[in-house]
Length: 399
Ligand SMILES: Cc1cc2nc3c(=O)[nH]c(=O)nc-3n(C[C@H](O)[C@H](O)[C@H](O)COP(=O)(O)OP(=O)(O)OC[C@H]3O[C@@H](n4cnc5c(N)ncnc54)[C@H](O)[C@@H]3O)c2cc1C
Image 1 (cartoon, rainbow, N blue to C red):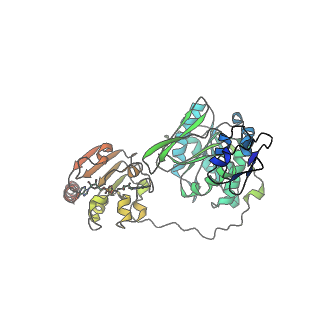
Image 2 (image 1 turned 60 degrees about the vertical axis):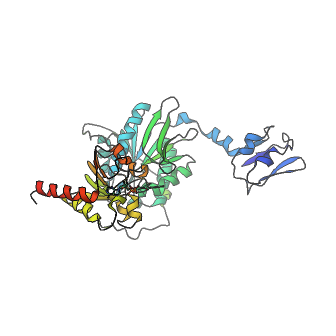
Image 3 (image 1 turned 135 degrees about the vertical axis):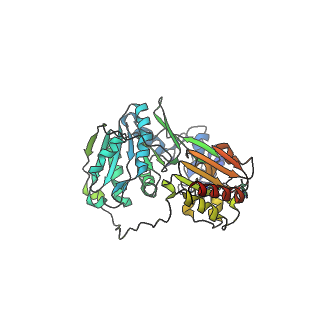
């Protein structure tokens, strides 16, 4: 709340002048605040020549935060449908490096029902400690109990850094956890590092429509929280010889309660190769020129046992469903082979496929930006290049 020290206020009116929301007026030579209109932007506090204004919560926050009490790096394991999801191992790979740099243990948090047997897998992939909360009410993911449990764990053990998957599950409750803890959360990070001097987590992510990469820090609050999309980080090779500590945490029963009931959960039927896990992806761009021409992309993908990807231009045109979209607002992929057919290479697309091992681009414009990130480039018309490529592969395969 914005507070005014009436003894210090001289009624000069500078605060009234700078307030963009009309929340301050001078009455009887003293500033008066309309708290319903005040947004706590702090401009008046910085402007007041006599130091009469103060945002009270800021003072409280400074008091609460003793950053030295917060230590350790955590990864929130994603356990669904009876298995751990690969994003967990990818996060552990990245978090291991952060924990080693900070010289602290790396812990994984495993929430669910009958999950204890999966703890050893987390240890193999780099965790030193596993906090397990196992309860029948956690058998299915529900936002309220999962949020309550995680908040309770964080308050109890005080980790300085928390990483979670930017998946449907992570996106639905990690922001609530950050809000309850009154700390920052950087979503969809593409790079993470730490600055040793102040133990700050350097959270890099695309900003302003993907036109620049911003590195975000959370200097005054703990824990520092970030989400990372699947396939962005690399998992470590599993090490069967690793050992770790398993900590089964008891939580007050009331925290598992929720008025929400999950009636049914249905797994979406997947036709063709799953884009996110495909080793080979043939991607259609606007340069395919029509929906009919996509049959060339589909034929090549089928021949190579690959999946069909798309740029947003293609999904916006309705040539393929959004399920195929790669990029900032689509999926992040890291196949062994990515072939872009009539794809220009806009940054919003590149951020979703730049982790591919080999990138082949077919584009009739020799200056197309996609050639800057390509391993091999073919300058030509997709309608001529693709049939030749298909014919050659068929011949090689004896088809
Ligand atoms: C906030 C935001 C989020 C976005 N998210 C995404 C996202 O997630 N994924 C995504 O893909 N885009 C995204 N975009 C859109 C992105 O900026 C580009 O507009 C889009 O990627 C362009 O798709 P494209 O390469 O298919 O089309 P274009 O940019 O139109 O490129 C077509 C290319 O095909 C070539 N070409 C044309 N005809 C032929 C031919 N006959 N043979 C060979 N080459 C040919 C052209 O030379 C050109 O390079 C986003 C944009 C914004 C603002």
